[in-house]
Figure 1: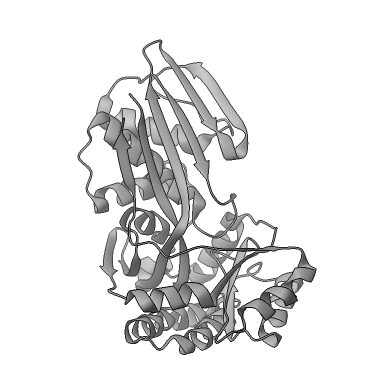
Figure 2 (figure 1 turned 45 degrees about the vertical axis):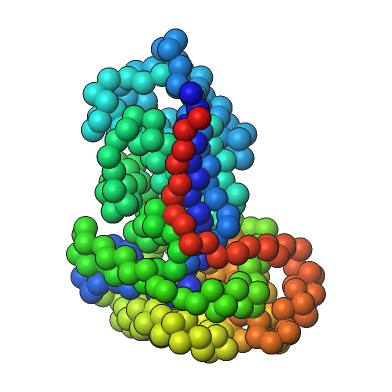
Length: 340
């Protein structure tokens, strides 16, 4: 028996950061995101020899250990250990023996939600194998709990829900646990045009998002007015982006992205730096009408809206920075699991 799963990565188009506690708990958050044709993959092969073998192919890491109730976090594949520990604790009540193979199309620190998407994919594979009846909200909430509560990893709530539900979604966050996912019926022509014009660019750098998120959360706790004003405006940006996509006013997207980026930079130190600023300004001077750093900031992927036929000239202008552009399409589906 072989069990497989895949879950899509996402682009956070608007409202990024407002899903992070304590802002979402105190003021409510709103985000608009869309999943793309880059994935986290998981394969489970059951064993009967009392061993657990984990192979994270993209990270070139392996684990070969005896099966037991709890796998101790020691800095080696702790994310995958945390998933296993919760599955045993909440569902099987006994150790499991298996091989787990994982791969993610984007590196850690990319800003596309790769860690949370991997958790969703692995959880989906376990649910398929063990016949655990988890609905979409249940699975996304469980993934959030494993990362943020069990493993105490800093971050927001959007990535787990984007990976589980898929598609273009306007998400609302209230208090500690309430999340509402509103799927948007965006015309296929609009999405094709958006994918053509929205240039995804990898800076060939990564960042430790937890440090930026911790700084952002601290600013909210201390009621830093610059941070709070920025996050209030980003929440407005998500509504602006929703209306723009539904109406097909695509050439306004660049302006909305730029509006958000100017405020996002004020949320915490480390979101931007001179290298990112130079890339951004170069793209704008070459024809892009707006853009942002994907995710928490500090590195990873950036994306730029290139109206008309400006895409190729923007790509050419960015070659001097040594990064790479990435082709993708928007996807309608979230987590998928199957067995052979």
